[in-house]
Image (cartoon, rainbow, N blue to C red; front, side):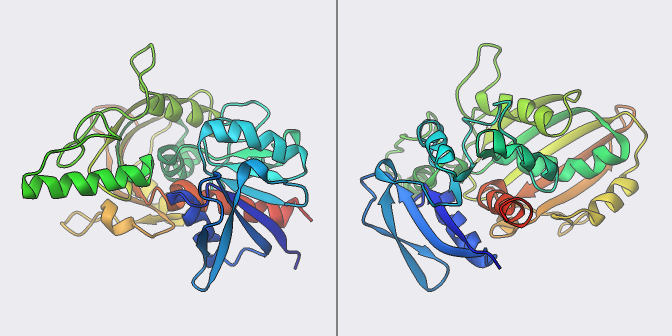
Length: 339
């Protein structure tokens, strides 16, 4: 079996560490793993699997010549600077940031949804992965789109603070503790208090009133699944550490029952259906943490619209929403393209 020299950019961040963990857990065929981060992190160490540690190198000084695959999650501006340089050196960059997602020469990929799009990587040696909330929604909706063709999606997200990084997780912890001991509530990452609260803004506001996160869900769904689908999204940050949840309303072109949807989802890869009408019959974020699959619950017909369904979709945003999706792309790349 051929082995690959793999770099991880943003290796000291929450997603970067999860990428290293996922590579090890899934036994990706590596000959060498290189951890890359900013100069201030260079010289430190990060874990690769249970027993190995990898020294962190300075991304700005690193030469990508000879590296086969790079998994990146270090911010859009950083990707803008280094990814083209790595691509020109012959390294295929699988980028988890937003910078290249809408580039027509860069495939935007969810392996369970559009794996064939990976073939387009040769134009720039870059493959983009979607926003975490888009990934889990499309994994769940692809089997239903194949069955009855989606016309319109209305989604409200309930997104964990880990989507905003380690500092956001720290802020939730510190604020929660401050509430109980009656300390001052300090806000540094979020403009409003996140502990015991919800914030209906993720990313910056745009001119039409949408936030950038909401726009991403609209644009990415069209690029990945179908340009004709209409999408309306409201994205909300909630005081949960790990695990994004989504309440999704879908309108189809053809009739589809809850039973038919449930059966199709149970057959699909990467999906676990837990859908029973009692207190333990659905999945919450705390139960999906550390899990690879996307979980679907509360599947029911929408009586207010013709051919409509409602679903509750939950996934670990650091796993399937980021690290796992990138590693799955790398696995297909290694198996089918980098021979």
